[in-house]
Amino acid sequence: MDLKQYIEFHRQNKERSCDLVTYLYYLMDRSGLDAPSLYQKANLSRQLYSSIISGKSKPSLNVLIKIAFALQLNNHECKLLLKKASYTLSSSSTFSLIIRYCIENRIYDLRQLNEYLLAYGYEDRLIY
Image (cartoon, rainbow, N blue to C red; front, side):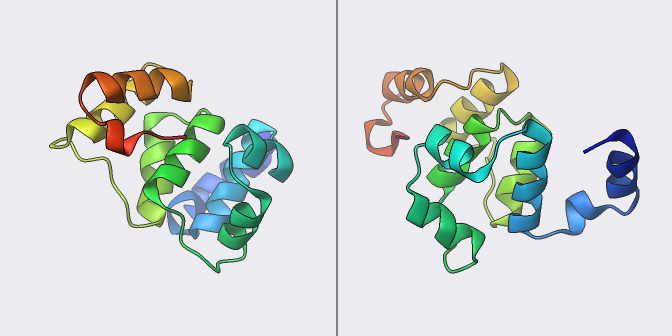
């Protein structure tokens, strides 16, 4: 996306008004990742990715977190991606705060995230 397209996109407020799939394509385009690169980097099956893109299934919170990490999203972009699927990372949840900490500190390694989750007793909520 060049500067002119970027300005037009944001002027029309498409970032906020577009659906999950459109926003995901925007983020992929901006990051330079194509579909196979994204689903491989996010450790998703091609079938699951296809199901999300086609609108046949709503992605889980864990899947969206893996996508956010693969795309190396900032806090704002991650919040918006999650919001489009009706999720949020609440300040009252330690699990959510750990994820937000990683994003805000640009720690996009899922192994490191899982180490933090384990340290705080979230062995049942690890993200693979």
